[in-house]
Image 1 (cartoon, rainbow, N blue to C red):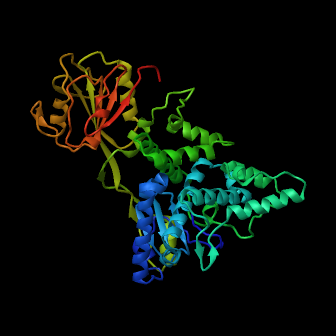
Image 2 (image 1 turned 30 degrees about the vertical axis):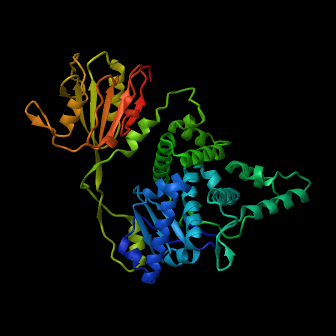
Image 3 (image 1 turned 90 degrees about the horizontal axis):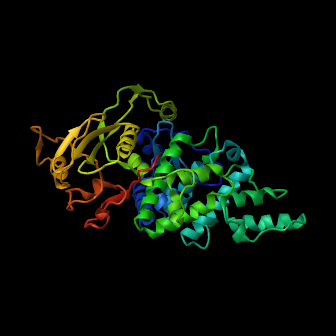
Length: 468
């Protein structure tokens, strides 16, 4: 995913050795420091106001490396599941803050578009590549409030959507066809593509615009990694929107509107995320609980060492090109999620709800699950064992046990959970855990949703007891 229109090739990069990249024809240290400052300022602005999706996406790029190994900037989605942001320090400094924002937004949007429009036939079509540039840059101009593309040495850095529309209008008019206005031309991503395909001579540059859309060579864009990262960014943005982040809601509604037409895949992805809730819609053919996806995606974790050595081919090729010795690396760290699931057995808890949640957690890879039942006391159990209860209800006994203050069967809970899931009808005195942001309350039908209004508020979701 490398920004630019000059057609220069970017080195093939996997999870490359950070020091080798940083030392590749190193830039002046003052330039590197200023480039880092601009990058951090841009990402901060994204998170606060301008693009929740871009903010979450770059949060997944754990390595953000200034290097002259790329001419501009690139987001690498490699086959080992990792993402990197590579940026040329001199390029960022010459662009300035507004230009850096534009480039980073552009790169993030390319990842999302590749996630939503993954059809190889589209990606092979140079007209679709041009349409992607037009659509992304139009949205960037609007979303970032810019009157024009950022300038570099007095020249626009990218494809100007207004210029392409002017050429489109001239082409159709010359052949007796009726062009659409700019607002309609840029209404959706596929609309741009469809209108450009009406031209006799679409203005596709001789040189490819961005190496990010190339299937062979160029910057690695492993589809599985792209899907995982982009889906996570969209999911976390949806959560922010549901929690009242107006900017995230506006961005997602705009993105949904721009990508649903003409793409069954995009519509299916939005449906699987449960994003229709932002429009007041529900899926007709299935129940989509967006919090389930969040549970799978963003649980905190602890680390354990990887168990096998691998030879990273692309990283090895890069290191060889930089004069470094190739090396084996461990696969890891591997993340295990520490999850506590507590069932309220004080009343009539539908068995199918318990079975459903047990199966859901069982499908999450790398989860260390601790199962509790409770009424007025805590009763640990294993899935498949009979659970007992029927007395009064106390949420405090769960908090005391999970936070290590009380013993059950002579033992204290000696691990730190990353999330505590409470399946209950909600009818018991309120409790304030030590870390309320880790608690997820699943309230059965007819129950009390007090955790949502509690101070501090906790994640609270309604679960249904119908068939799934």
